[in-house]
Image (cartoon, rainbow, N blue to C red; front, side, top):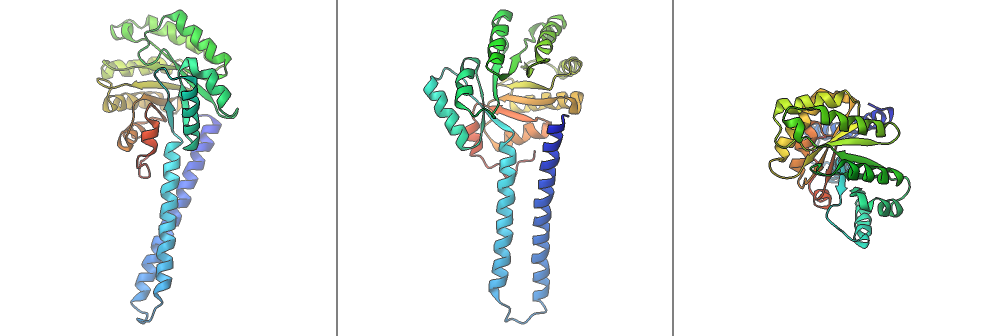
Length: 286
């Protein structure tokens, strides 16, 4: 795990501890007050108890808001389809309002780079979601995205690998790894139709290339939230802390997000990020 990511995780854990400690102290204080009330005359001032209750509610609300912000920081929006430039600009503005981050399709990279502040990274998915593009077209889009200073997730075709031949897979991974030495490029896999043992073998192959992260596609049946979560768990168990596992697809509810996070997903890139941003996320475990 990188130093920056380690610092981020430690920071989040410290914040969790502070809020949890404050919550416990406040709750203990309320219990002690209740115990003392048995030994105090009936003339105790009710305003004091009301103020203590309000303080507890304030801390509880602050903790819920913190958790929601923490979850949203790991959810990215994904623009798909064929929007106009003005529609993309509007979407970027809406995303900024809810502090969401956007992953755009290749042709929109330059627009996003111009519209977003320089400190915000631009990311794109090439050959997404099912990796059916030609090698020439895919390399062209990767190079164009890199020139625009965008991070790239590139779809890798698994059709031949599923039949037992891993050589084309190795060729694609070697190409991506060579490009990623100077740029952030990661493989994207659609594991729909693969058995658990095949997914485990795929994860073991990927581990040898030492990518910073990999993405798994979630795009409806048969690649459902449950089957994708199972694949995430396999990748997470094989790769450990060496490589982040991310999910890209249509995630719309807090329950779906939690299922993927608990399986080991580090980030969720969803086409319905606006709907998910309005979901009740304060109890989601991440």
